[in-house]
Image (cartoon, rainbow, N blue to C red; front, top):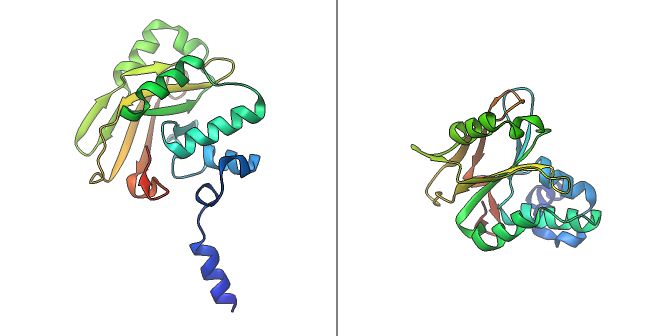
Length: 183
């Protein structure tokens, strides 16, 4: 009987599959944003929180967290996501960047040196949304150049004032939400 209960617990769907976003606890939202298939800490030190903000479960977590805090995300970003999100991968990066992005040369270097790798192909940043008081995440926009046949996505990032080089990998087999690949 104990073995059966343990097996059932292992096969249970994660909370983001089993419950609606309004039913998620604050701790569950934070878990989704920090330690889920769509969220990683970058390598090497100092660790940086990174997540696939364009993936549906992450959008739902951000919307619910903003609703609970009574603070909206960046309106320009939300408009862009509504209009272009289906064609883009948006990477959110939790950084205390203040001076780095204000420095035009460092910002340009980030845009030139940060890439997304899918298989043997490399893709550059197509745009960015800098942090604002209501949304403290740097958001980098990449093309949605991933297919079901790919194995994973690797982001190689130049982040001013923070290392500056970081690498994050997301295996595609882990990025399923309600049976669908979510990026």
